[in-house]
Length: 160
Image (cartoon, rainbow, N blue to C red; front, side, top):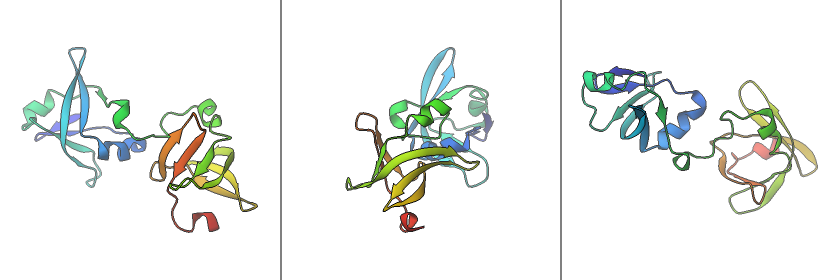
């Protein structure tokens, strides 16, 4: 993190950008305690990750928070399937059903492969193999008890 005019430039892994856009509070470690700060504004458009926190209104105040670890509550983050998954945890999704928001079964994950840009699930859909990106933008819910992933897939994805 680097302080700039009350905004803080944060190094945020691109896998977590979507999560940061929905956060209202984050925690910054100070004197071995995680202190909550409410997010006023986030600007990713400049190519930087500039975060404006409430009550941090000067460069000096922002600089006091530089190089401090940042945290978010797990309950505040959407399910992030790509986040630090090991090969074992990816493999655990094999056998999960992918369902649409209305509960219709789209298919069962037969295999999962990691490509440079994303993780892809292989399912059988209407007798043919279809690749589904396991992307935060499409995942609405993951239910480990039912072994289901609810997804809102873009129109035409299953016909490709």
